[in-house]
Length: 89
Image 1 (tube, rainbow, N blue to C red):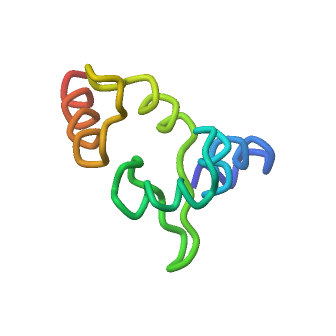
Image 2: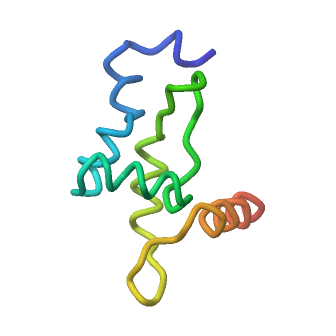
């Protein structure tokens, strides 16, 4: 496991919880929870039934790729975009 080799601070800086997602987006935690519930955030990493984290690099890439109307991609569209990009590499 790569995370075991990294200092805790670098692992913690790479992943954020719901409060971190809310802060990143500049919205309330409740709004971030609604975005997650309606699948309008990227797919999180589920650590347990109640604990999920988001990859901060993935959030940055997702937020940097808005649709033509300026809104952000939903989860399915973002996953499809990432799949296409990974096939190109």
